[in-house]
Amino acid sequence: MKGSTYRRCSCRDPKTGKELGSSCPKRNSRNHCTYSIRQELPPHEDGSRRSFARGGYPSLKAAQADLDHVRALLGLAESDDPEGVRLIAEMLSEVCSDKLPLPDVEETRRRLNAGQDLVGSLTLGEWLDRWLAGKRIRKSGISRYETDVRVHLKPHIGDRRLDRLRVSHLSEMFTAITDANAEILEQNAQRRAAVEELATVPWKGAENRARRKAMKAAIDAMPPFRRVTGPSTRQHIKATLRAALNDAIGQQIITFNPAAHVEIDSVRKPKALVWTDERVTRWQQTGEKPSPVMVWTPEQTGAFLDFVATDRLYAMWHLIAFRGLRRGEACGQPWSETNLDRHSLTVTGQLVQDGWEVEASEPKTDSGFRVVALDDDTVGVLERHRKQQEADREEWGSAWVETGLAFTQEDGSWLHPGKVTDLFERLVAASGLPPIRLHDLRHGAATLMLAADIDIKIVSDTLGHSDTRITRDIYQSVLPHVGKSAAEATAKLVPLQRKTAAEDASKAAKKAKDKAKAEARAKKKGKRKKPKK
Image (cartoon, rainbow, N blue to C red; front, side):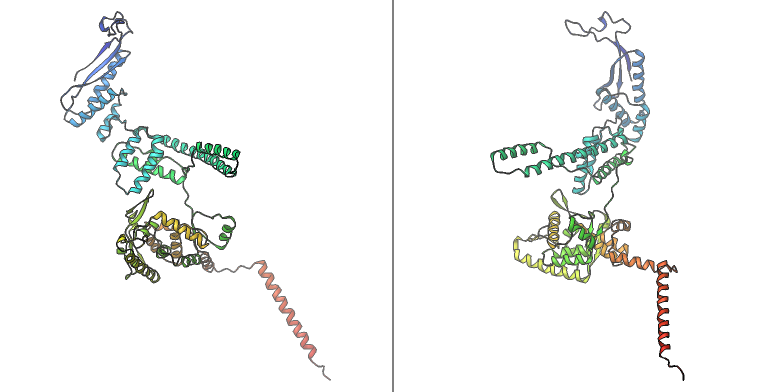
């Protein structure tokens, strides 16, 4: 294809404004003109011509070097590869129109052979939008990804070119998030102090009212209370980015995933602790929980179930407490998958929250689909609950909402998982028992099963864990009497012949005491004997 270099003078006639071109009197000066190149490119699909043109080169040598560069790029595609020819032509057209540097020949060859974008101008933000649009997972999962992208990834690194994203860029992002946390905490403290001060100002009196008005205006001008981005959220941001970049690698857009190599603070999941008498006493004195995850003892669980025995949703509290169903699984359990004759139920779905909206969904993992055995007492509780629900259906008549679920609102409609949590917390507070979360009731079921010496595999299957290691990692808390029994059983396995100084002294004292008693008895016996005449 035709291509050439040429000199160009950009001087203009001061009267007409037109370029002087070859009539410029300074044209023959050595450093007056610049050089330009023009290279014919493969035509458009409709047959129209296109070319690569660029000017402003200071010398003929520099212009010729770029013209050779353009021709080398055109030579990457074989003549019998029309798709490759088209891609190279489109790349050069884009480079020309956007005035981008000419891409490296070998890098372009690699991209062409790998089927990657040749120009590589796709930004991370553009890729994340494309990635989210192609995800086919449940709505709540998409919402969580979208939040990470919208709140953190796009504002911090969304304008970075996807193929030039580096580990250092991600480290800078997480450092900025940590710095923002410190600022948020400071602003929250200032706003909280202002609100507390406002509460101390009396309402009566013109001076007080004016002061309150000024303080309210100052508070309104402050940033609102905000949550910090904690370690768990930062880990989720990293996981979102890593998943998106892995898909980009799978589509051969990039070859390196920096999210797999950036280091951030690890998250330590809190271990479950049992509400022992000592911890309950401490909580009553200070109001502080020893751990975010607390578990009731069997006696405390029994006390709670007795307290809520007349609650309309007692059967659900009972089922979670003994069989460890998750909140969404209990809310979404259908009667059609609850076989009381066979003493079992099958978990096949759940109700999940997306913001405040509720949607039906399948279990999160394959292990979530499971059969849960039921004991006689739980079966009896569920049978009584079903009879009560049938009575409610008759009472509501045509207004009854038929969902087929075991646990519903008064009119048969879905339970809102968030409202179920709120109800549970109110019941716990009213019972006077030490506080636990609704999910901790599930923890308690696991602990009870382990305390009953149930095989860890059965416990794991009942809870819907994919691996018994998950069960061991989460449920490390054991009831005190179980730990004591285990300690005693372990100690008895080792025969010991050791004697402590205290034991020796005790035995010596006992021996001396016994000897003294024997001597006293012998002396007394001797006095009773009469002398011979």
